[in-house]
Image (tube, rainbow, N blue to C red; front, side, top):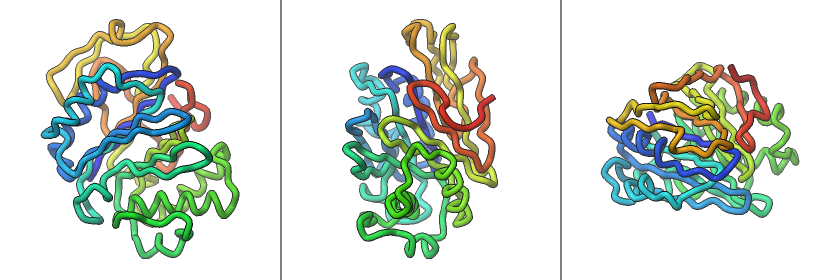
Length: 258
């Protein structure tokens, strides 16, 4: 089924708390995991085609306080299309306008409907419908000269792409985190807004509590996005099906929240 994790804050943060719980979801998503730390100039992606909760690398990222970025995209994979290997493990990356474009998807799409829409300059390196969807999106943006800030056009394109199957996705152009929820509500997507005054939370996937007043600086603010809520003790809101939310510097710059 796969699950998604997104972090979008106004300052570099550590993903430790959210990733601690998220990696446990590999119990139902056994075919790979990945985590991208994203800045405006580059993305550092760590991924393996094995269970995240059995990975020493995954555990080291969870406990690494030096790992920090304003945007993160995470994924745990249950393969529905494509072999279990590194090429087919999310997130995927392409160079774009001096930075990195990072993409992760949850759902199953009709590949026969995607293939004709991929331009030669965005070749697919693996065999997943997810990477194909990324290449379709980039091909459209290049062909139509669509800027990533044309949020309404991007949302309309994703709604059209959603006709090919189930489509939950996160992607980033290095400056913003884009989150789209499937029009039929497939598998869920939700968010929580973290800002002062912070509270105490407990993970839903691991016996772990954290006082966010100790974890966060007073000026930090931003959003955590996940397929299913990660914590108790803070409010989580479901995305509207068929809608796009875009986060930049810890704020919503496109889409309706609340």
